[in-house]
Length: 250
Image 1 (cartoon, rainbow, N blue to C red):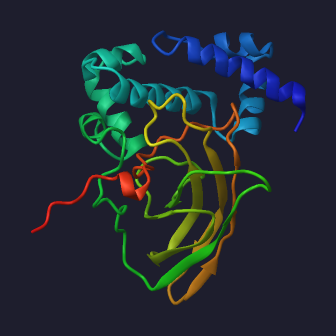
Image 2: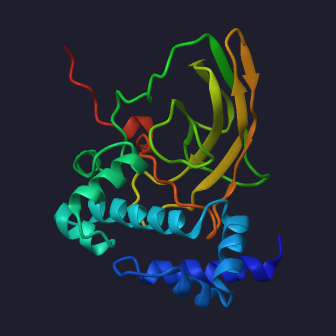
């Protein structure tokens, strides 16, 4: 991809990051990228895969996730800090993007609920499986693999699993539909500033029909780039298994 276009989009993303609490227009973003508004929208979608407005909304929710796990600010204050005048609108957008409410996300310290396995549109016998591969010489944390309806880690996955290391994964009972297999590795919580950079990967679309026994979908991870849309989905805790709290017997 043209380096000049990528850098222009990166400049607009930097403007977004500095203006999360403010009202920012498409003209402002196009000006920061040094493009016309029409040309900017087309180039932004070409580079990131989504519209500037959707990217900005995702950045606001990503910052809200960080504030919920790293500060004691109220949910009302956080909603204002990320550009929402209505806490109801903020909570709805947060739940849609992350898969849980802001209060649940804070209580769980950023981790998805243990019992959460995704939505259940309709059970079927199809299995989606494959290999998660990392670049040669790269080292990653535990790897989350989820099945989504869009090519973003956004909302609740239809199916999910966590791998201790790169290798084979399997998603059972996948319902009919068109899905994307998305994978990422990352820190235990968004607030862990010293954690290694997250890697991401995507395979899709994957079409599932009734009577299909299995689909193969290999996913290759790569380091996350500035222009990649934020990961919004509430992920399972990436703490090593030995460090996880013991469950109470009985």
